[in-house]
Image 1: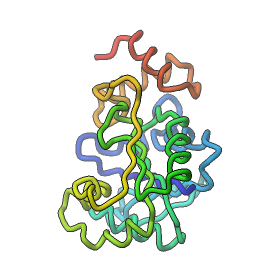
Image 2 (image 1 turned 90 degrees about the vertical axis):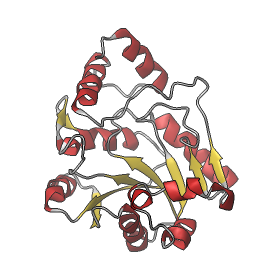
Image 3 (image 1 turned 30 degrees about the vertical axis):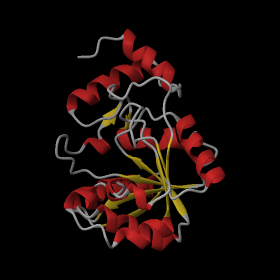
Image 4 (image 1 turned 180 degrees about the vertical axis):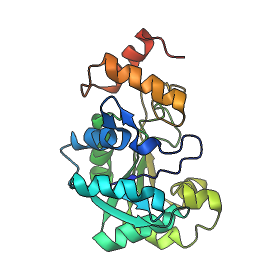
Length: 225
């Protein structure tokens, strides 16, 4: 399975967060390291923009031997089209670069479902039962490319699966859920405060690759503002 990591420096709420140091590693490095724990991921591609601000992401990827693809900043659909076509991708898993605590078991669970059921999309956000920062989506590339030209709204160009969820009756979408509904817990980094909270969790867990259940236990133990 190919994993496409969506990354940029121009976050509206927290600019530059992707390359900020998060306990001795950049946020992007932490996301990529978590993904690398999966034995079911064959290749990771970082998809970023051609904006000068994202030159820093390219330099990091080249230095650390990660494959990178650069295209349109605001039209993320176009960026994914280019990535799919350049690397001849049959299907892909989409991960956001704001998820440094992503549980690898969730990635593997999604891949197992996708390979067994062969749907158009496997997701855990339609509806969401997992916390933010644990979002996983696998998409059939042929389906994505077939309908990508129909994606015209600004919102759907930026959030590439929204079109498919809005028109879900047209597609075979499988959503898997978490036993406990903890969707209100935030384990992603959208703001400086999120960054500080995640930093506390990483320090407490001693930088180990632990499960979502244990991360939630740690989160309850420490004082997050």
